[in-house]
Image 1: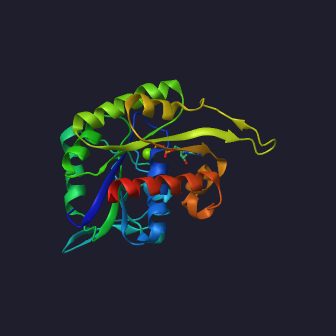
Image 2: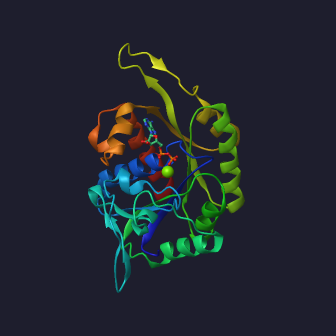
Length: 257
Ligand SMILES: Nc1ncnc2c1ncn2[C@@H]1O[C@H](COP(=O)(O)OP(=O)(O)O)[C@@H](O)[C@H]1O
Ligand SMILES: [Mg+2]
């Protein structure tokens, strides 16, 4: 892990808010920003690993050699390691008890030959339970966490837990990203705020955390992601792609100083 300059974990209060999507697109935005081959993604979501599918690496298996386990290479030479690479099939569940699970995460982190990386993004399991805790504890000198939420009030309550969690762990919070903030009707052009609006920014202000940006709902995001093609490469002119690039600028400024 010593040849990794910056380590950032992406966390959320709960699942389904787009944590993996944000992780993958931030990795791509970083790679596009002159870091081809120097960005890695660790998919530490043991029970729902989906980074491989999002980066077109489904069915990939890990190879190992003398220096350790080699990551797979995704678009823009993004180095990817996922629990999914160890499973016999995509629909096989991981049914492990606590200690085994923790052992797997520890091994994940110690045996991988990442090589030189500018950024390693870690997609943690949803919520603030065991696995998130272990990964954060096992990773020394994290630059910080990015917290993903959606605008609804229900989510604002749980995202506060994530903020407290990071603070208790002594990990800096790089900021909050609000995802699924409104959709523009393809027929009339009007914006519909499906989950309300401004929730992420409000929590950020309330909790004294940086607000990094709002990513709209966009059917093209879901479509390209399911196809394993990174959204910001496929739709570089979209509003969401611009927001991802802005977030990366902010994150680079915070981490590079
Ligand atoms: N802004 C968005 N617009 C459209 N679809 C989205 C958006 N954000 C996430 N999705 C889709 O929603 C689903 C859940 O996102 P995911 O990143 O897997 O959530 P999490 O990792 O938080 O559980 C995925 O199919 C993803 O492609
Ligand atoms: Mg996920």
